[in-house]
Length: 418
Image 1 (tube, one colour):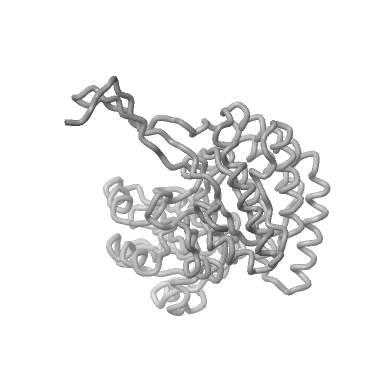
Image 2 (cartoon, rainbow, N blue to C red):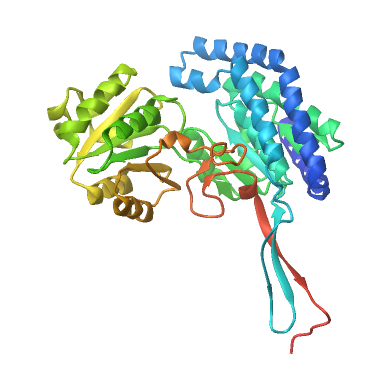
């Protein structure tokens, strides 16, 4: 009962804080975000010490290198968190922004304006920077947050939370606008998914299959779903060879543990004999193992791919390779095996590029660019809570604007309806 009471109390305090944040002006929220960035910098040693303990425990538990990479912080990564907070502070405040306005024949002046959602529950695993991104983006959009990180990052997230709350305090805003769930008890996740007696308005989940499956099965409040990123890059028959190799290596190997990393390379049969060896050599030099279909293996040596490889989110230095007959077959493969995250085409044919952009139904589609640009910071959002792969409300990088809803403001001069 103690945990249940504690969680309900967090919900009550978050709801009260949300009202204060909603009514605060944009300048005050900006001041809080700037103060948060400075507290992250001044607390860097504490954050890094806590992270070192989390990482050591994860290594002792035998967790995968890709997981360790997502968990681990360095001085540069801590500074990147602070820089991200500064960037969020500098983006336009979305609260009360008009998205449309029109006048009716009867003289009614109607406007659609952005308004905060309220209290956002964020459930995430491993990446401690998500705590800063989520808390800051929610604040920029006038919301309060309840953050529940994974047990493996608990100490790091707790120290990041201290810095964020200090920034709120400096700006005269309630510290309860950002709360960190202080327990690793999985029951706390279940309580959040039930909504804490109506305190939570929406859940954002960011993690592996088991977490996403639990959220989808148990949530009793709306969810911004972040599913796995089985991302594809298709090398079209009219691709520039040097450009294709450069993009593929970056899309796969820049950072293999991010959800925007390319997991499957599709290459057109017309150019596979000439381009695939060049691309494969560049990937091998970068340390990537390849798993291909029969056609790919006939062109250059690699391990055999199984049916499971086409559905795999490796988050590791492994790439699946398939030779396709053309644009239609590439799009069909993506439709069958993709997770609606991010897909890219490499081509110099403008018509093929536009066809790909129109026909591929994923949250992000790209032409001649690395899928690793699938990131709210790279989109100019300052940061992101995650990449939403659903179709309702938010899709793609979830930034401050996506953490608002809207209302209609109607101004009259005495009109009555006949």
